[in-house]
Length: 584
Image (cartoon, rainbow, N blue to C red; front, side, top):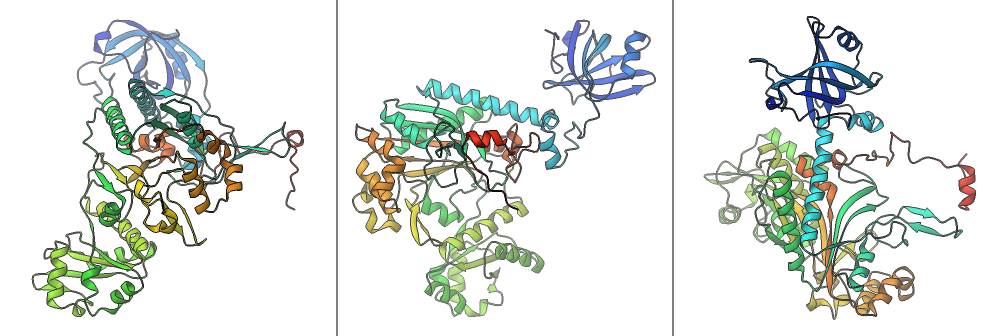
């Protein structure tokens, strides 16, 4: 080994030991001819000292050192002395007086700072990712990701799961996003797809008798990017046979409790369970942030009895009226700010009423009788000195607007602890969702989810009422993963495919291998795909998954570091039977 210790390892107990350290020159200081360098590796920093009175030759070499030079130093550990200890460093009590110095590699001046206090812009960070990854924060993030996976694998193994790898070159099947496709050289005109998820293969593994499967799977989707979305992301994928949805949720809850305890030392509370209807009713969204209690109130039944025509017209056209009660008064400027937020999220307008000792006050309060005002105040538990903010619209839009307002109010009013972790389950989703743009029914999650038993016989006749045996896991208002009990009966699967627009011929062209496999006895089974990147990002205190991925893409799905995607040679195109028609 080129070193005896790491740069974060030495303590006061090592004083007088002869040691060898290797690392990067993080910072250099010259104090009256004595040179101090902070030597850095991924374990930490150690101060090393070049004293001309101790060794002139080594000191002379040290005078020419630059930032990020790679060094090997040999010397004696010594106590820094009272008043010179650095309490911010684990190695802050000691330093190494250098006897020998070897420059393992020289560095040019780095184009970005290797310093958590001076973080470069996004483009520079991604272009020089190998430098950005030297920052302690990034190394800490990736170490936590590693610890997460170690704990997860430990829990899977202890519970009888088998780690099985599924293919990366698969058949293109509709899964909700665009596929990345790979041309086949040996099969001209044919293409593989990169998997959006292992969904079909893990179901086939259940048919094959592997009743407890898991995989740390790379999933690839060609979709527009944002901070919590990348072309390639990682999920913990799992499937279980002969189980109910409660069994799967119980296992996954235990998995996260184990991981958080092992990695962060955090004991998680039990995860509350909401139905989809409950979540939409109270929070306006199917991924509720339950760190704070600021609920939405459906007041349609009360306000339609008023003389305020706007509310009456919305209700007449199939809409609802909901309000939020932040239990705080706002200035007119603040109210205008929140109205603007609502409008940016699709509201055609907002209404508000101030709660006083004498009832409600605003430009619309006159349309509400004293009796209605009392009824409204009681329903939303309003106290004098607070403002009620109303949105009236179609249910989906009304809920969405108020859910965004709720989160903004929570941020502004500091209603939650950012360091807290609050998980929840949301279950009993609708099996189908109506696509207004294309005027057709689509799966809410995916087409392989089983309807609840009471809907199996006639789901085609009442698609808007059908509840699926499917659920989501959320953390602090972020969806971590979705799961369901799968359709294991071929006839039911074919009916679902037909209902969403796949005729029998097309269904067998795309999914025939799955439907055929079920002919030979597919067990009842279900599972989940859990977002590893999102989970780790939230654990380190960010919503940006790029902060926990070693080499992410930018918003254009490009890697500024290696230049991908890039053109390929004419020979490669010819071998792949691809003829590019370039634009003039």
